[in-house]
Length: 377
Image 1: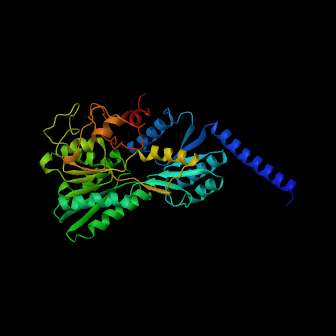
Image 2: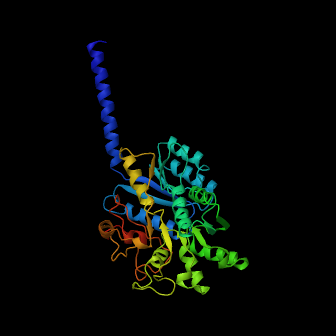
Image 3: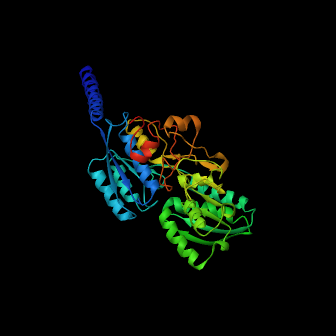
């Protein structure tokens, strides 16, 4: 190669490098276009996760960096796939999603990835190889509750199971984990199961139907994905005293956690069944902060940072002895005291989920989950 040719090659390489650097700088001058793709939205958990995502997007660290748009498909994999395809075609930089199916969205996800879109799912696992996932170990969720319930029943008893949204990856994995535990104990019998769609109101309807042909005496304990609070309410209504209530392995609704507090404890705003009652329970959480964490990681990937394809969030798990009432609900309070439940005076909705704290999200506190507002606003 001649000296002139070497100079030309060097000049062209330098020009290309300058062009890429200039393009990257230009790209950073405008916000990333990020979509939130939601499927099923019919419960408090989904609403909180969405609120917390919006709060993070509007926080000082992110508000000028991203433009967030939200679309809801409902429990329809075809519609969600169509929306994901449209998002990619419209120039999305990233799609943060709660998928309705582990596998049925894979074609649309691959199409998005092929266009250079970062796709990251939270809580509901998607199996497309190019996608990122942030989730809890759903099988472990099922095992933790089942193991506690078996021990509470002394290894012998009849169990009623309350499941979630059929076909979703968390529901299938939780059931698998629980049944793996129950199958190890020949004197534990699963006498029935109902589908409650992760909703307190649906649980009331479906459990009422079950009790129309059965009685509370037909089972000794409940394994519940969402709905321990309502199960206790219905026992109240049936005249079952606190000391006779069926043990319930369930979720992190605020009402459930308030009921787990000592019956003698005075809590502001507590009344009726939304009160401390020494409810024999374990609270196993799939925390809604997975949503904003997915948004944070999507931005990290777009910024060129390394993020693992699978992030498994530890499952917050508390027994009655570990319940601690928050006074303000700021991130700092939760970080410093590890408080994990809020008074009914602050959270009038007992179905609201109270596991908000993540050490990675100082922008997210009580107001983020309630109002979509970041800390300090």
